[in-house]
Image (cartoon, rainbow, N blue to C red; front, side):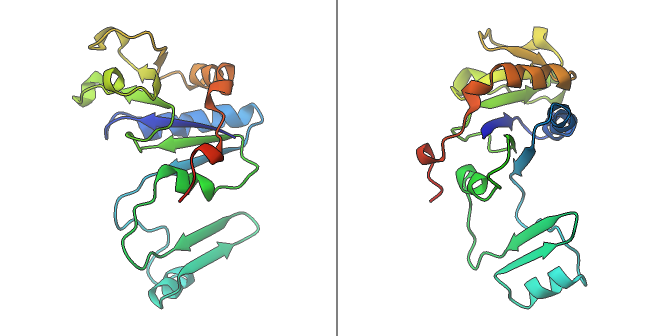
Amino acid sequence: MKVIGFAGYSGSGKTTLLERLIPELKQRGLRVSVVKHAHHNFDVDHPGKDSWRHRQAGAFEVVIASDRRLALMREFEVPTQLNVHQMIAELHDGVDWVLVEGFKFSDLHKIEVWRPSAGKPVQYPDDVFITAIATDAPQALPAATLRPVLDVNDPAAIAQWLLDNGHRFDYDPTLHPAD
């Protein structure tokens, strides 16, 4: 499996880019999974639904499956901050690419998504794990870089760049124990 992170501040367009990149990779016959960091009390089911009722009753895990999808929800008895490697370990073995949104300070190779209109600083000068920058304004980058600069509005080109450089993103779970 290959793993690449997408880092950037809120409002930079990470989710939009992934939303457009996933179909590009799927069209090339690849199976894609996403790992995303969420805020404290996010929820995937809704009050009154069976899964919600089971969780409210105290179930540690609830697995729901239909003929179209499977969802696993696990309740932590004490607040627990999973690292990205622990989340990747939860994924199915048959995935070709894992796109990681968030975890901007992780030790994964990452593409920094940066738009000057968001008014946030760049990270690439200080983060050795950033392997490329995706932006809509390459001329506005505040520091020179030898890293590839990709057009954030061209997901087909970004998908091709990932495939052309795929060997760089091979994930070895033994180097990143999920403990």
